[in-house]
Length: 222
Image (tube, rainbow, N blue to C red; front, side, top):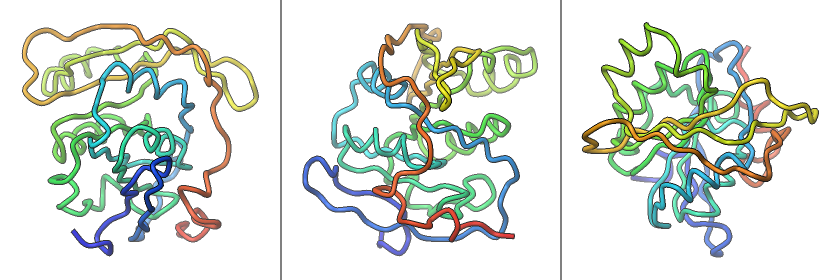
């Protein structure tokens, strides 16, 4: 895998390693990309629960402003990332570099809600282990229960005990869950609760330590 083929961070910045560049550009931008940044308080409890080692290679295919990526960097040596609005990569319509699916161990992401089912199918076609953040209402509905969750049954459903605070300080009206798929899982779905107690407010803007200045403007297509 060459640097020109990938958009990733190899090396945890807190460990004094370096960051590689992202590449590629999309020919079309999906309208209403549901860019809702993920607070650290919704990431740390998941990672504490999963207990993945630092050498785990994690991929965020819809990185948004880079806030989830930044949280992942604090735990993992290798974080791959891409985004429709910030790097021009559409995970659904432009296949990611084939080597990413061979290289990454997990996909951990907060996907656009309106395209959630498509993101799940695409993610599971790339890697064997996936964790995605949704609002709790995602678990409802006969169509999804008899379709997606029958075809692709998750291994775990993890309910966040505290609700997210929006960027203006108001509390979200719905709870969030992490839905997890794991390689070779057998048996019933494991249900559990994540004790997220702090850093619950949705961030704003984008992180320049993840995306360079002007990254969103450079990726936008009329």
